[in-house]
Length: 251
Image (cartoon, rainbow, N blue to C red; front, side, top):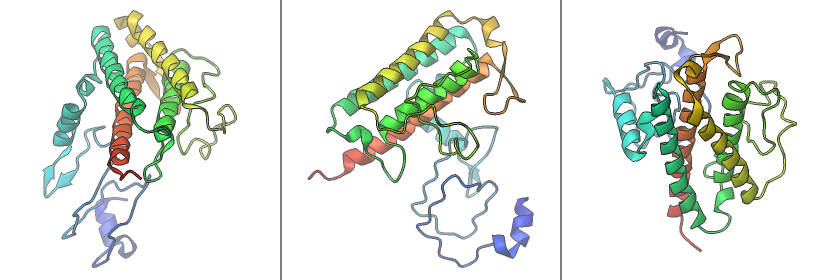
């Protein structure tokens, strides 16, 4: 449905309605239009905001370039995530490792139990690391290395994994100790580092199958770009939630 179609459909048009405080989670709001609305305090978090040349217009101004530049400022090294040659990719991954090392040191200095705290129903810090284990297994183990069963049992699948018909039996349903999560995460970080250490330009051009949509062709490079995007996006989420936890009053 186009924006003009939605405007003509009374069931998709909200006029003089109080929608303050509503929360949209995993909803398609593409093409939504707000006219004369009070948007004070509105928070938007979209990991796909900067993909495919999309725009987010605020009072007629596309703010996506500002968002991209500001995230690069806040997270040094993020700007290297779209590198296209082996040396650039190695530098990009080194930046990822440095950023996570800083955040892991921060978490280690926080009160016990911090790693299992959730903010507004989001994944805890431990769950975030577990999801990155699963993401690495998907895009490196499955897509690039073509392992028949790449998944570590401590991996954390995304919310739609089961409803999309994928088998969750490989993943533990128990809450693992954080030391085990760190060990699993380090094993996957090492896998990526070792791949980058030896990768060539020819390797980057090798066709791969998209692990979620096998009919869509990827390349080794596009798979590695996805891994880098996953790392930076989830690092951003982790830092965001740690800031909230840090700001809570102590008892």
